[in-house]
Image (tube, rainbow, N blue to C red; front, side, top):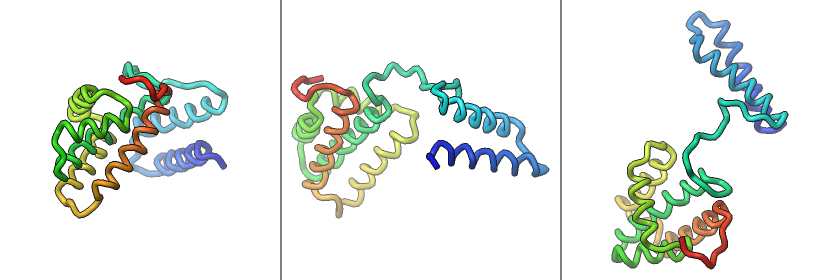
Length: 165
């Protein structure tokens, strides 16, 4: 069974349980029912409003993944700075791994720190915890992770590695 079908089955069970209970939240039942219909529509190639992507202006093959990678880059700069790198060296190290100009990190940092997207804030918080408790990861591990995230970022943007952003 596909994950989508499992989710649909789960939602249908929850709707049935909510309808049987005395404290049923009708608005939530309607929303879950809309999600079930939306999942059925996705099986036919149609994207209903409940699952339609938000109009964010983000680009690339996978814009949400791009934003998560950007948050990792900002967090990695923080972790490297705490481990003795200068701001410029930390930014350049991360920029090289992401195949971007160091100036782009400043823009990302501002966006990530001002975001209201919970997932991006959680990524940044993990790096802040790393800074507070510096036992792990090592500089080598941070750099390896930055390189890996840079590769993911480039694939998600679907851009060639020779160009700078």
